[in-house]
Length: 168
Image (cartoon, rainbow, N blue to C red; front, side):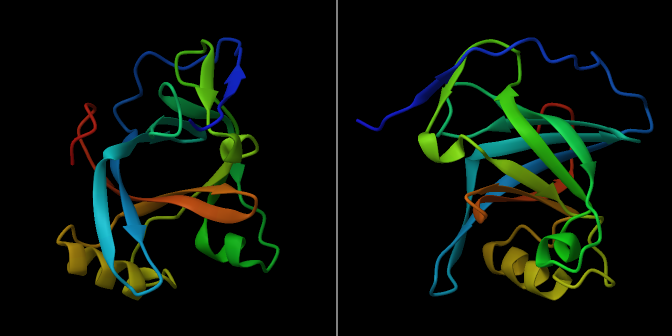
């Protein structure tokens, strides 16, 4: 049996409803391997809402006992790193989405996430993402949401404008 880390979390304030101008995305976990084969895992998802500077994520992954979120998100500083080329926003402080106690697999203890800017022809990874999306039949994502642990990507989610219930 895998070890889990238990956390007691305080309440995270999240607005009950986002403004009508909010961007809502349903994000699907895309898993790749070293041979270039990709598949989608619709059991692991992220519901993402961007409303100006307010960002809310609801992360559903098997490595956690309940849905998670990141409490702090901020713009990525342009420092010349790959991370700053790939992502517009960085999120930290992982916790349960409902503010209650939860458990996670140990590798997620110091996890953080990157949210890409809107993916269009000017985004450097657009051709690769379009190719992967075409291979698995889900198309080019409109954004990506990637969870890192120990400076390595652990989960990559392709995000599409979606309904509030998380379906694309």
